[in-house]
Image 1 (cartoon, chains in turn green, red):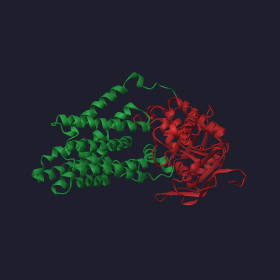
Image 2 (image 1 turned 90 degrees about the horizontal axis):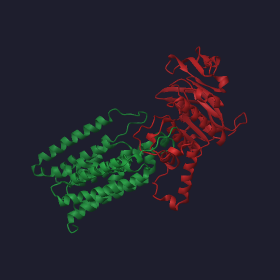
Image 3 (image 1 turned 45 degrees about the vertical axis):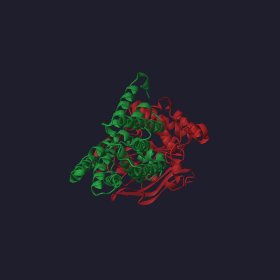
Image 4 (image 1 turned 30 degrees about the vertical axis):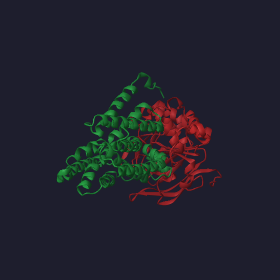
Length: 276
Length: 279
């Protein structure tokens, strides 16, 4: 297996993406912003499509589109308003417009019809050495920034008022986090395809949640789960090339999710009721 | 800081005023809270109780006047203050244990991330764990501290939140309507806990409430807030028909029920209407 360069690239890029996406996804699930994450993933489709149609490297499209979408859809409600009723509507609109734009870009250049499947559902064959290096660098940047602001970000997630009272820059933390999320989503979309990014963003975190209750430990478990999903998924698509990579990864994730859910339903797992 | 009565001042406002969106919330407020006392901030909804305490935390600026916490500006005194903001119940989906929440209260503002197995090779990490355990024991929450906080009852959640506010051993504890969503037995139990912490640990407590009854027996002082200013003193002195009528410039009756509860009738709400209000 190892002698195929495209497979090596897929395994290396896939592993990096698994680690980075599961960590950012773990934060995203805690912040209950999965809808935002999914939107950022969707916009990478027209991004890559337009870049390809213009003869530009698709990287530009992936990262450019997600960062632009992050600016629009990632806006937090301003201080004083605790709930923005238009947030979900804005995010949903961006998703719809993105899918339509992607379709137009793709159909405008006939030769890229085939790339629709790989852009949406992932593929082995597109991953060059440059891709791996870029994904590696983006991943390193994303993890460094996240590690640096981990504690304050989590505190601000659960308790923005206490975080503010402690003097933390809550708005800046949110902005930094959305910026990093956009980068990570763009990287992940290159492996799983734009539609199935949640397989590495959301699933490892939700699986980990069902296995452990301690906060930071669940992040480590999410990383382990994501790596398992990617490796098994790549193996599946390698041995059954008819399955797009994103599909294999998602299916493996689904199986693990169901297993973890059953595990969490054991009678011993239910905490005993304690009266206050 | 010693005030003019020679007592140590924990928290003092001097001719303070706050403006939000062009509206004056309150003005000409001068108050002094002694170290170690248990003080309640009362008044109708919307009068600015939360606003007042937020100025002591440095969360809101004063339009006029000054506020000092242990003699310093609120920003400087931050490490000595524990804050429990007004908040909603954690819903069942919230995936963090009480212990983790308390730990975040201890070092959540430190940049960086916790390292795995830190307790094995860092005495500082062990000390932090011990501090979290100690405060959880203080509020009697050890038995459910490892459970997901969304699964805890209202009373349990409040205890965990109090633990979070206490974990840094603050000298001033500011609580904004902590008894709001609790049933009567829990209100009494949590009020008792707060009073114990106040007396045994010499922590000054400033508690915003809309019903004084659960804490009445524990209070040293009440601050009754109105649009034009504030009235401060012992409950017996302040919560009288005469004083409240004068404060609100309108007839207000304070009635005492057979069980010792106080009911305030005729107190205007912040928007100029009149209403009955249980006190």
